[in-house]
Length: 297
Ligand code: G1P
Image (tube, rainbow, N blue to C red; front, side):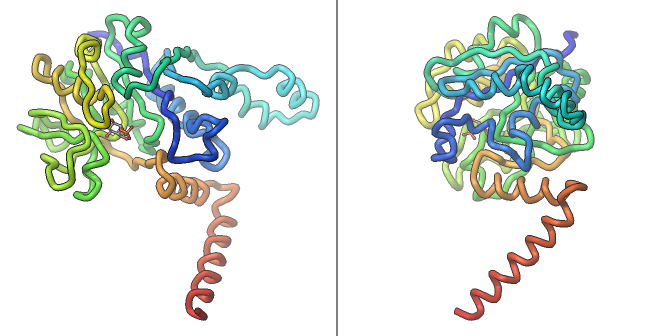
C-alpha cells in the first residue's frame, strides 16, 4: 500500500461572496484573527503527515505564493529588532514544500483537481478545500489517512448537516455501514435540489482519493452549476472501485460564506489566550448596547 504524502489544495475560485474584499486579494488570504484561512489548511496537512502540497491557483492569486515565500528584508528587520516571536511566525510559512500550478479558466472543482494529475502520478492523495477549516483532536486529514490504511479504499470525509443545508453540498446516498462512522455508498450527488437529498451526510471538504480518479475527471461532463464536479467523478469511480464515506470527528467551520466566516473569527478569537477575555467582554458590551437600542425603538 502506498503511503499518502501528497495534498492538493484548490484555490482558483473567484471569491465573489466576499467582494469587494476579494477584488484584488485572494479569498484564501482573508485572515481568521491573524492567520490567512489557507494557512490553517496547510497546518492540518503537515500535522497529518503530508510532505508535498500543490496549490491550484488562478488569476490574481499571487499573494498566496508570496505568503509562502521568504521575505529577506522583513526577516532581517525582525532579527535587528530582536522580535524572535514574529520572526518565528514569518519563518513558519516558508519552510514548507509547496508547489503551485495555475488553472487557466475556472471550470469547476473537478477540473481544478485534474490540473494536479502529473504532480500526483500514481499515488493516493488528499484533497483539502480551503473553505472548510476543521478543528479536531486528530487532524481530519489524518483521520482519513487512517481509514484508508485500514480499508485500502478511497475515503470521503462527511458529516451530518441540517435538511435545509443539503442543497449546498455533495451528498452521500449510503448503503451498508461497515461501522458506526464508515459507510459504503450507492452514489454521490452534487447539490441535490431541496427535498431530494438521499441523506444528510454531506461532503465537507476532505477527500482521500486513489489516482484512478483522474481517469474519470478526464472524461467528466459538466454537472451542477455548469461545472465539472469532483463529486460526479467520485460517484463514477465508486462504481468500479469502492469509495467509502467516513464521518470524521471534529468541528468544521465554513469560512466560504460571510456568516460562517464571522462565526469562525469570533470562536477562534474567544479561544485565544491573548484575546479571548477581551473579546468576550467586548461582545457582551456590544450585545447589551444592541439590546438597549432595540428595546428603546
Ligand atoms: C464543494 C463541493 C461539494 C462539497 C463542498 C464542501 O462545493 O463541490 O461537493 O460538499 O465543496 O464545502 P462548493 O462549496 O465549492 O460549491
